[in-house]
Image (cartoon, rainbow, N blue to C red; front, top):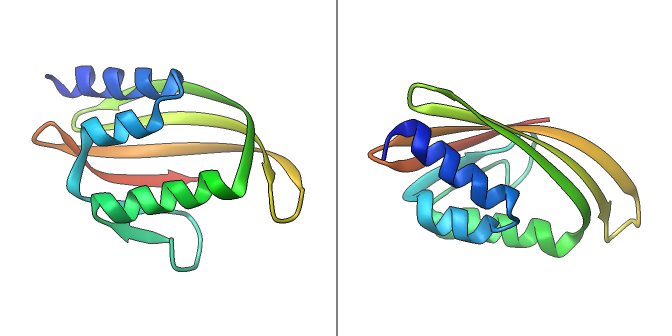
Length: 117
């Protein structure tokens, strides 16, 4: 698959709400995930650590809606824009947020995901 085909396939799975399938299919074993925040999940490395971070996020947030735009491809990287309407379960605070995911590929797999919000 070309970089564009990988980006399109990955993003199509995200748009269909199949995040775990997208990660299982396209994340490299040694993927690095970088969040725009401080704390223990600011940087995770490895497929299992990234999955654990994702599982934590979904366990602590009620997702009302997600809009996914993209992919926007440039060489071995692509960006996806997300708009989310969520409620933090701990506080009950409902919020809307926009986020950009920048994904870097190598050998047909995503080796880094970096989020901006």
